[in-house]
Length: 333
Image 1: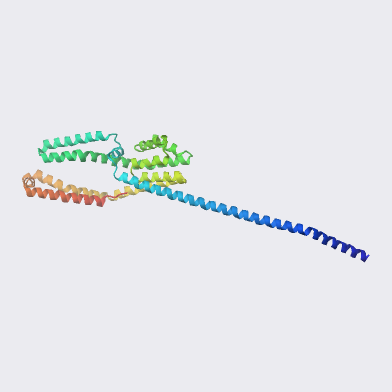
Image 2 (image 1 turned 90 degrees about the vertical axis):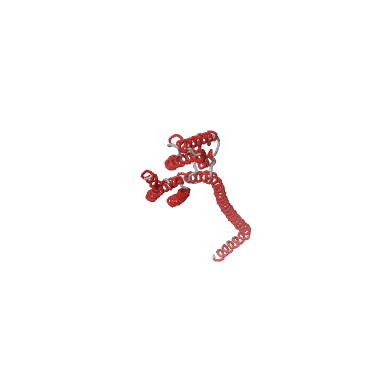
């Protein structure tokens, strides 16, 4: 019995050894194949990860370069716009003042104003030099002074209404409306002069001009820091993307805070302005009162050469004092 068990055990060991000898190369080959497949998979996975990482880095670099190019282009445009905004031509100043005059009509108006002032001074004084001086002032200074006053008034009114227009754009974008539709709403519903300026933007877009370029023209028509900020925000959003409603909301908040600060500074400087006005008008008022009360006493200033020199020196120093006081109380925003 023991011999039979020993024989069976020996046969099993022999069969196992034979099976191992036969199957061992195949098992080894399968292990090598699995190992090579695993190495290839890891290499492929690492390669894909490296490619993805390289693509992400390239995309980030490309986006950064695009933003840098956009900012550089905006800076160049800003310098060019500032150069034209600081010293605009006559036709541009008349448009900014809200006048529909041509340059020819303006020249005719200037000639008429100069002629009218010259005739008036000739009738009142009878002096040819005074008449010529009045003609120069009336023909060259008075019309430009009127345009400058109307232009300043219109720009001030635009700056007061512009934050409301930006808020309308913000609400429209948050409601899901395209920017072009919000601009069209402003061109029909906003108050003047914002309505007419945004109508020009809508008309430019209808001619095929992009929104960034159309808004950029707004700064040329209305040379204010507010319109410059608005043009920069729209240009960056159109080229690099971003949350337009949030950017314009922040811009509207900044503009309103600037306006509050401007009003606060004007209120605080009103005392200095009143003092400057009183000091500047005091010599004229005192001289007029003395002339009314005792014309013989003050007439020497107008009849003697020394009196003419005194009047000229007084006018010169009063002009210098008024200019200095104006610069001291004039705050630029």
